[in-house]
Image 1 (cartoon, rainbow, N blue to C red):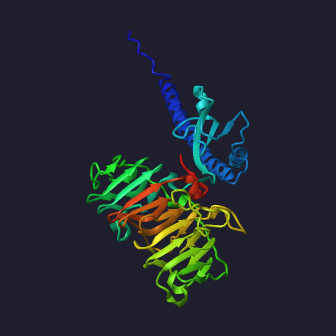
Image 2 (spheres, rainbow, N blue to C red; image 1 turned 135 degrees about the vertical axis):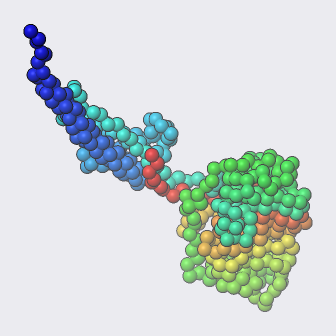
Length: 446
């Protein structure tokens, strides 16, 4: 007798296996979708919490409370059971660890599972984070105190400008003590040196790109440093001088000796305001703000000074009287020219008086970005300039002439050219130059 094996129950086994598979797919689809959705929602909550916390910090509010409240409004209430929210300043890890300008938000969120419980999984945990930059206003020197600065971000061809970012040519000799040069341009000819020109700086020449392409080896000491970090000119605030309704005047106090008062000047200064159209002489400038609506032009043999009381030291150098001396030239239109036959001795205002704004201290010449001017500084042998020359969208030409110009100044232009055969001696002292305030900023970083 033949006994056959029974096939009863095989279908039940197949159905069971299929059911397990179906439950697995269901768990993957439903629970996986829930975990993914929560992660995306938690990330959005962390992003908005970080940005809100950064904005609160910029506004000098409670950044931690603001970050926690924003996360809570998005469903993550830091209850310690289903979720945790932590706000850090500075971040405790990552690329911005320890940087006080950044705020980090971390969120832990538990997601309860449904179908996955069959295989023993009761919950999944999402961990997300976000980082935002919160830069608060900060009083600082312009461009880290570099004495000569070109703000142009690219080559002249790219910007439609007629000058290269920074050029040194001729037989000029430039010495910078306590400071250096910064060239913001990202192009191969950012720092262009030719002829027998010499440049010697104490802290070096920092060029965003292309420093080695066009400089003369051995004639810039130390050699330019290429690939420096570019700087955004918009991070700084600009001064806003005002002359109100005051009209400036120039009077002749004796033969060939003139005295100028602060205020508004229409027409090129000083020629348009001179009595009798005198071509030259000695011009003393009273303390205050000079709003020159058509620029400034000294083309004759002038002696121009802010030294009202004629005080000098044992070496014959001007002694600046902070209480009664100093000027700020505000040039909303027109060029600025000091030629080689004029002896110039100018000092910026470095003390407060009669409502003079503190933020304007130590600015000697300010040409706003709306005026794309040419600033030419030549000056006769022995000329001196003290205070910041800020012309962020102008071309600055420094012509040494045949003598030596002494500069205790920071010169900021869109492009800068050192030309001629003379000598520029820049002895930079931050105490005699302007400071600025960085713009507050909030941006998502990670």
